[in-house]
Length: 189
Image (cartoon, rainbow, N blue to C red; front, top):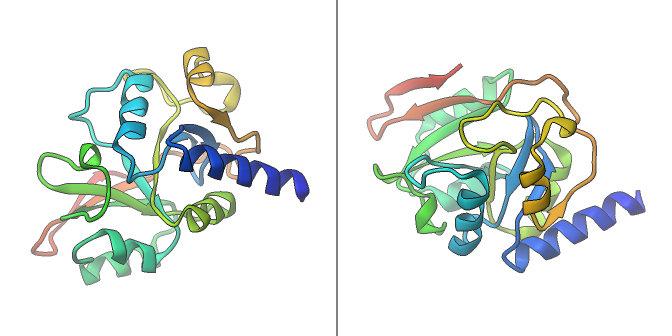
């Protein structure tokens, strides 16, 4: 338990200093940073060799935090999340209080209410959303396990949270876009 707490505290310290972490999420291994720190977000884009026009996902700990970072959460989002059987990311219009380079050209942001206990605790302690993007170089396959993560990623992050991925063989989250008029569009099943 102490080892777990040490990893949590180290990850938190790195995030607060503008660093990047490699960590297990409720879906896959992710690369993350404080979602309010634009310089840290830039580091992730560079590390992944990803175009800034391709958006990243953010994780929040609960509905209350979600409401703090989206101008208006459509009612249909609560229904979708309440009944989702697997991790589900929703793209919301008009995000608030996050790094500008995370916001898509259409003024939207993909956010997932995380289910992983470590991620949830880390986000609650950070008191801000956490960037979460798969731990791969852009265009390459998403690693199914830590052993498949590219050396450039392993060496490029500031800290690796050496905990096991709780839900092995879980695909990336579903992605759903909810328009301002509450229209629902499935982006990834």
